[in-house]
Length: 227
Image (tube, rainbow, N blue to C red):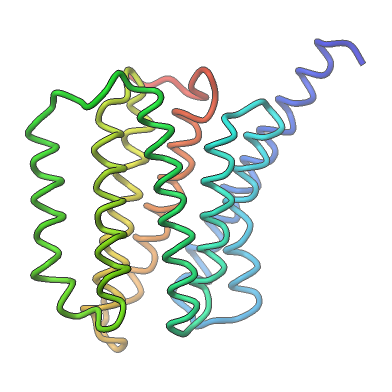
């Protein structure tokens, strides 16, 4: 196989894996995200992040991004099951994924952004969780607080990305999905009519946000360019 043929093969595999991940994302949003735990739900939910990770790995993507996506897959599987233990496993996996993104974003940036207003708003949001979230988290109060710090740092470091708007959008979509999830888990009753739309919104923001991070900052050049 020539170098040109190998490059063409890797590109084909990359886009094929991305397509699989996106199709599974849509299928989960339409048929599974608002339903209770099941093997089928866990299986479909477990497809997008490994597919995106494999797409990066096969085409010389950044290994930190690959690791973050695989950690997210562990979190997806854990959160597809009921119980506090599963929730804690998912929380730890996603926290580590955020650490990976923080390190990657910081490495790509030249330091903190000088956009002080957005940074201030993120810090204000983080502080506000002490009033509307922390008092309702019970024994999970400390892990949730640590997680809030990490997602806030992820958003702040994303603001410093030079010329990578897609990755910035993805990071804030991820942050928004975590916010919806926290409301759904700790502030919303199981019988609320908002449970289903919340499940669909948080899943799409999360999965497409992860894809946007990958497309914008997963390779040496963005997969797509946006103005």
